[in-house]
Length: 122
Image (cartoon, rainbow, N blue to C red; front, side):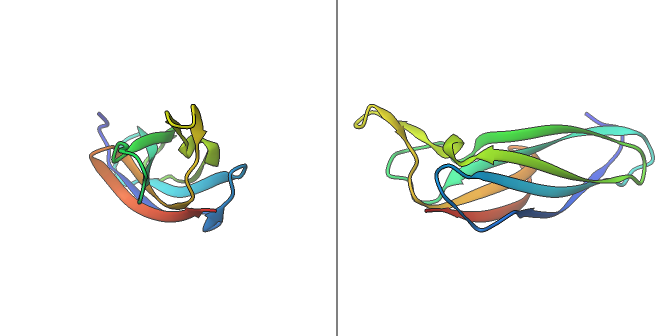
């Protein structure tokens, strides 16, 4: 719990399409809009839009704790290896990265998503 307020804006990725060995770089601007020093945790969740198996709706893939003074803004970058989007495939007995569309949800908790981005894994 923080005794100040924050805004999260301008979320984007470094590109729209990724291969298996790429890293996804998510950048987001956070601002302390309150009157006190504060700490917030930026979180990135992923969701496979059309998975061949049942998967959670949101999987935490990256997070970063940010300390800000009143009125301070900061651009935060979080890196997610595309291989972290894989799931263990029991039929293959190996990790499987499915191609297709993924949603990246940026927020301060799984229940407080501020922005949603879409990427493609080729």
